[in-house]
Image 1 (cartoon, rainbow, N blue to C red):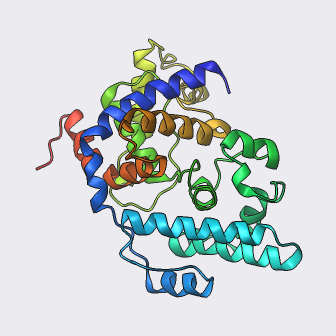
Image 2: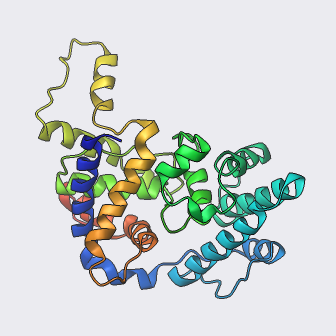
Length: 290
């Protein structure tokens, strides 16, 4: 991790915290309701399911229940361990997360790739850097919306979900605030509204303009323009760790009274993404929303 990346993350995190601060109490309206299938599957896996409205507290409780069960299974060995871990991973990604297109072999890969080389007590892993060291994990951008859900449920004190809604919101705030930091890559998403607004390009272009980076001439080959645009984005292999640094910084600034956890910060950003963030972005580009 370079000093430049840390500095960028701090600047981005400060801007994010300033944007989120007036909305801190909106988290009470957060909802990700559990489907009937999710409730049935959770109970079959031995997970306590209380309030199923998917509010912030209920979601946190489910995360903690999965994390505890993962630690119990991780201490096992052989087929029993593998089957148990795959079942939990499949529940988190395909059932709770709604990403049903992930194949069995993909779930099996995610469930083992991040955890197989970890110590017996998973709580000894306290950061992405430590996980990278133990699991020799490269946090690939491919599948990030899926595998980051799994990491978040295993380590909900430091790992966060990174998906299209989160990346959209981060880039929209980046564009609105004119942050002097590289923008985020946006994975494929399912939100019909957010998919129509390309915040990755908006934020990237504003970053390049801020830094006085001139675009290649019109007679240049398209590849030169592609490379120029790429320079405004965090490289794929560094995206997840950069994201965690930004969110950790935002949480530090927001958490003046100890009432805002790292996961609270992520859920707040997710909740606002297709609400206030969209409105504020359209207002910034001069298209007011009633």
